[in-house]
Length: 258
Image 1: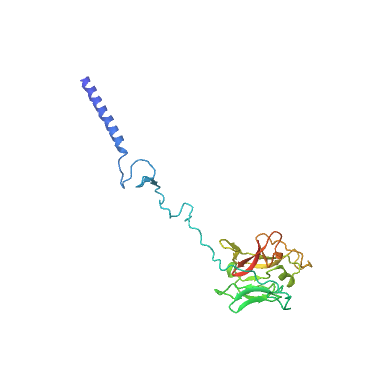
Image 2: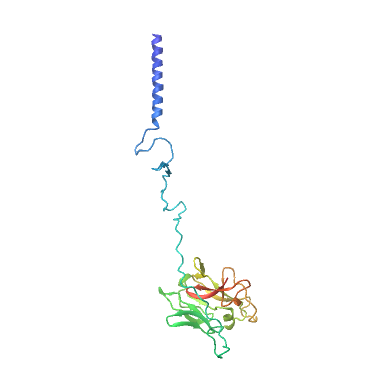
C-alpha cells in the first residue's frame, strides 16, 4: 500500500510539472482581444519592409514633428521694386545757371501719389498715412514737429508715420541746428530681400546731443540710439565706417547707413 501511494504521488508531481511547462511555453503566443500580444513588450510594431514605426506617431515625412515644426519655411516678404535714394540737394547748375533736379535742405520727399510726387516744404514734415475708420489714409504734410493726424493712434501699421528728415541737413534747415543724426524708430527689418526693407509703425526723427544748439553744419554725423536705424541721403549722413544705401520703409524709398 505504501508503495502504491508513492507511485501515485510521483505520477501527480510529473503531471503538474508538465502542465506548468506547457502553459508557460504557450503563454507568450496567447493573443488578447484586439490581436495584441499578451506579453509586456513596447508599442513598436514591425512594418512590411522589416523596419519599425512607433505607435505614437506617423511614419510619413510630411507630418508635424514633436516641436510643432512642419519643415516648411515661412513665405518670403513682398519686397516690391528695388528702391533708389530720394532726390539729392538742389544747387546751381554750372552751365545753365538753373537749379538742378533735387530738393533743397529742409524740403522732404514724402511719397509718390496718384497726383504726382508729394514733397513737404521747409517748416513742414511728411506724414505717411495710417488707418482711419478702417480705411488707409492718404499721405500728407503737417507742421514740422506736430502730431500726424492721418491715422489712428494705434501702434504698428495702423498709425501714421511722421518723417522729419531724409538727411541731417533737413533737421538743421528746420531749426534743429544741433542735429547730428536722422533716425528711424520703431520699425522692423524684414529678411529675404535684396535691399533693406522695414515695416511696421515708427517715425523718422532728428537726433543729437543738443538739437537746439549752435553746432556748425559740418560737425559730422553721430550714430543713432541702440535699436534705431540711421537714415541718410549721402555717405556724409553716416557715421564712420558705414555707407548710404537705398532702402524702403512702408513703401517709401529712403537711404540707410550700412
